[in-house]
Length: 592
Ligand code: UTP
Ligand code: MG
Image (cartoon, rainbow, N blue to C red; front, side, top):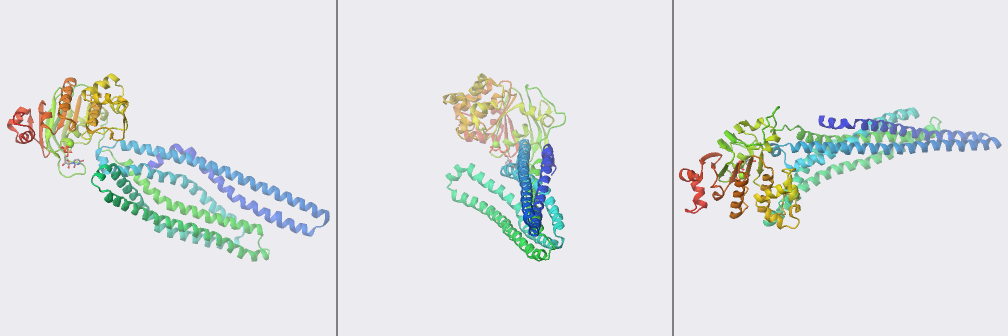
């Protein structure tokens, strides 16, 4: 709740003015029946009696007076009604402004919080759930605020005011109101106990629906290729059906309320008229008072009805508030020290010192006792079978995860002591799965370095062997890139991602299996260009192909999370069994 409170604060003036207007609205609503009863009691009943008793000219002047009285009081009613309309409009406007504004702020806060998440936190929430939390859950909170404020202020005023006014008009009929209120409360309780338990379920089902839809839509190609449309359809259908059933249940129950309330609201006036008729006949009650009484009893029931709405909405919104708080309260695992060290963007030596690592949600060590040094001006290659921990290892340098034991240092400074921005400024990173953002080639490249000139950009693309295919395109650097970069080939995507990293002109480069989609000649040209142009940089290349790493200054051979060999190609081919196996499986005797 504290997050919501914090977000409401800027809207306090709006909130207060809304409350004031709502109070005015309630007051006007209570005044109206009273004026109406005057028209009936005085304007019709009293005058008619007087006119009946008078005669001739007196009667004529009384008739005129009666007309005037009714017109003036009617005009009063009209004014009140118009004023009520204006106030209602104002309330709607203020509430809409407040609600949408708050929702926007809240969404922004959640989004920036999510942006600060490291992989560890992303593993905790699913992407689908994070999306629902930023959209649907915020919407629930927005609804609660706008409707809630209105109800919390308006309903009690209306209810209590209604009771007071009704008591004034006809105290002997108070039991009718008491009875109707008890019936309304009973109805609310039944509905409440049936519907509320389902709300939490519904929110999780929305997550699930979102997840299934996202998965099968983003993996559409795979679904088609394996002809699993039917399976996916069934999976979606199941999730959707479950959601539908629960929603239907809740809405059916809720919609029962409407007709039942209407029934009550119509029965009560009949009862009132029935009882009041006798009193009127005995001159214990005035007709106008009875009419006002009917309206007040309607107001009282309406107030309870509104409160019941809140009772239903509130638990639902609370579920959403909690889900939002879960995100906002998540403590980032990757945090900065208070006075972080800032290293100059200069030569960097990356060292691993006895590093062990376990994934936050995983079991067992993925990396064990890793120690090596990657020197500036050198290429350090990491090779090993799939799943041996290469990606996990390089992810520790950029602090996508933190080490469990040991330390990763840059120029002798533990990466955990550095400012995150500084650390990432030092590193040009090409992930194993190259991801481009929607936009153009230019916007993607510039995301790494806003200040880079066109010449620098072209140079980076030249090094990454991307220049040629980009310049063959009609739009060149303004070629549109769709979400995820799916409208360029895998190899092209990799090369744009490499160019993006090179654009950074950073002292450390990490290429995680980044040449896998390139043919041998492009691979060779690229490595040559890297060596020539980034001669002072610390280059770490993760690779699967011996051919692409054999000329590295240092090769690290990994197996099941451990380093089993370290050295140059020549040294390893002599002494390291695992390296020999990999090398001989890929190269001919002469090539080795
Ligand atoms: P890696 O992803 O580090 O292996 O996973 P790798 O060497 O780079 O493999 P390739 O060549 O790209 O295919 C190492 C181990 O860590 C686990 C995996 O199950 C794997 O056994 N792992 C990986 C996790 O537990 N959680 C993750 O988020 C990622
Ligand atoms: Mg990998």
